[in-house]
Every structure is written in C-alpha cells, then in structure tokens.
Length: 258
Image (cartoon, rainbow, N blue to C red; front, side):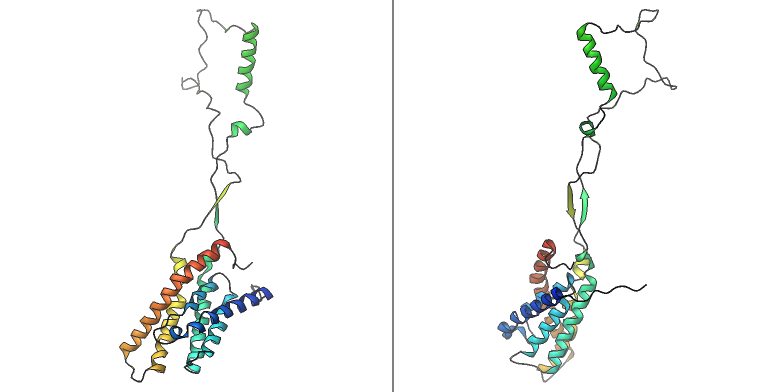
C-alpha cells in the first residue's frame, strides 16, 4: 500500500526560511566562538525544531550552509559541506525519533456526577414515602397488618433465610465520565533520545575533521579531545537552550505541523 507524502507548502517554506535566517543571525555575530575546535554555536539550539516540524529540516540545513559559507575565517569546502551535511543528517534523525514529542496529549476524564440528582425518574421508594407522610398527616394512614399473635408480620426472607438487604443510599456518587478533561503527557527516555542526534552526529563528523583542517600534527588523543569538546558544547546548547525552547513550542503548539 502506497503512503501519501505531503509536499512542502508555502507556510512550510516560509518557516524554513525564517529558521535559516535565525541560524545565520545567531552564528555570524558571534563568529569568534562559533567556529573552531572549541566552539559554542548558539544557533545549534534551533536544531531541536525538526522534532516538531519537518519544515525545520531544510531550515537548519540552509542556515548552517550559509553560516559556514559566510564565515570570515572559512576553512574551505570540507567545513562548508561537511558541517552542513552533518546538520542535515542530525535534523532528519531528530524528526524520525521525535514522534513522541508530536503525539497528542492524552485526555483523562476525572469528574464525578451524582446520578440521584440528574435522574429523570425519581425512585419509587421516595414516592411511596411521600404518599405515606401525606396520609399520616391527614389522619388516613392505614394501620399495619397484624397477624393472629398480635404482632406485626416479619419481613419477607429469601431462600437463605436472611432478610433482604435495604435499598442502597441513593446519594452515592458512582464514577461517571463528564466533559471535564485533564491533559497529561509523561516525559520519558524517548523524548531525550530525539535530542541526541545533533550532539552525536556533529561530534563524530565535525569533531573528526576540524583537527585535520586546523592542526599540523594530528594524533588519536587530539581527535578524541576534539570529539569530546564538540559533544560537550553541543550538549550544553541543545539541553540548555534548545530543550526549553522545544518545551515552550510543544506546550503552545505554535510549531506543530497540521
């Protein structure tokens, strides 16, 4: 069975353009610490946006491509394409892993309704009691039946020899769903996994080729240090800036694709 793929609309293209422009604006003015082995790129907070909307994938890709292309201290085609493609791959993976973020919140009904007040037909026992009280006040209440021994008759008993149970209290409030609903969505490990691609992908790509472009002597510990540095700075930006942004947009539904 073929699945229908939705094409990018004008709204999606506009959103992608805005994200790309924001990426450039958050990168170039801070170029002195946005490029290099030890880099702290504020624009990487935008890499969480593909989790909520696929239109953000080309947005962060084009933004990263333009930022690397306009870098005052450009490192050449390797950095321009390498970093941009890494951002594109990370954005795609974040979107695929972010289904939990895009799922609607569960609606839980938690109110109680008193059916004794909303019942269309009043209980028969209440009618009988009201009629008896009326006759008693007017002096026409019938006397109880008396058997030959002069005592009032005993109540009917069932086959087990026990007297029937009394009617249950009509004021009990059984659980009945109503229109009052509370939304609930649990934050679990799937939400965290969707945030990891920008950290892991950039660390394993940008962290590897940057020492080759910037340093004359290369060693395995140096490459490991570069990978760790990129992973650390990416994690600080993604979780420190990107996660609060993502939570705000997810709560308000502003970026969710219809």
